[in-house]
Image (cartoon, rainbow, N blue to C red):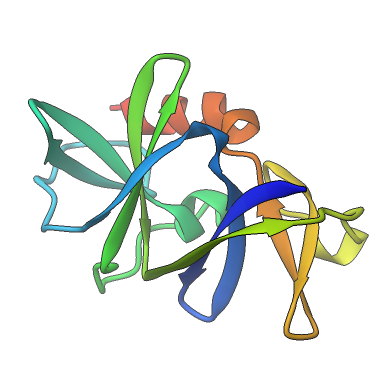
Length: 140
């Protein structure tokens, strides 16, 4: 079994393997920064530093951030760098059995699916997706 944090982004639910996750915080309005990356929302203060925040759905889809700001940020550490993933809601950490990813649910960084209430939920390994997310989060 693997611990998975279930999050919602719009009408999409995904699971995040908790290994790289540090905390979930209430998202405050990020400081906008110039970026060629449409998924980069901006920077938020976390502790004593500014952390790039990417809208997770936009990053997964290669799209721009939606106009509406999500309510939460999942803070992750990847290769000793910290990044925030904007989500609408983080519901729970649950132990899950991850099964093979069906081809119709291909999502960047997905390692499989868990079944929740009769629906297959893609599970993302943030560490696998990490290099791509850090590159996006530091692009300018």
